[in-house]
Image 1 (cartoon, rainbow, N blue to C red):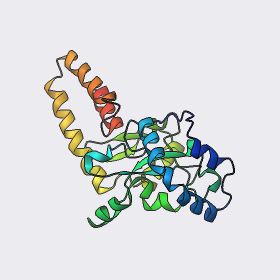
Image 2: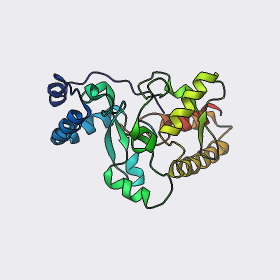
Image 3: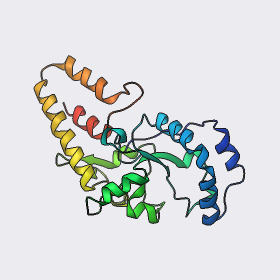
Length: 229
C-alpha cells in the first residue's frame, strides 16, 4: 500500500452533495445512487491522483482486464456523513462485473474494497488506510508473493498490519500469484545487471516513476526489491 496524498479538488457536483452530508446509511446509499451521473468523472479524477493504480492492492487494473470502482475508505454505511467527502474517496480495483469473474474461480478471491471483511465494517483503530502518510512502513513483500507485516514493527503495529491485510484480503490467490510473477521477473532483471549501476538507476526511473501519468503495478514490492540492489 502506498500513501495517497489527498489534495483538495474542486469538483462542483461533489461539493454540492457534501454541503448537507447524509446522516443515515439509508440516506447515504440513496444519495450515492443518485450521484451516478457524476461517478465516471469523479473516478477519472481519483485515478489521475493515484497514477492509475488501486488504492489498496497497487495493481493497474486494466493490465489484468479489470476495472475500478469508487471506494469509500471508511464505509458509507458506517460513516454516512463522509459519503461525499473527497478525502474519504479513492479508486479501488474491481468493478461489479469483475466480481462475478473472480468468484467463478472459487475460494475467497475478492480483495480490496470488495473483500468480505472490508465490505462489512472498518475498525478505525486497527485499519491502515492509504491516507496514512507512512502506511507503506507497515508491510513487507515475500518472494512467494505474500504481503506480511514488516519485521521491524512493534506488537501493536504488527496487529494493525495483520488486521489490514486480512480485512482487504491482500493475500488473495490472485494477488499472491501476480506478485510472485512480477517478483521473479524483476529479481531476474536486477541479477542480470548487478554490476551496472547505470542500468539499475534507469530501472528505478522506469519502474518507480509514472510513465505517461501511470505507475506500474506493485509499486511497493518493486521499490523493496530495487532498494536492496
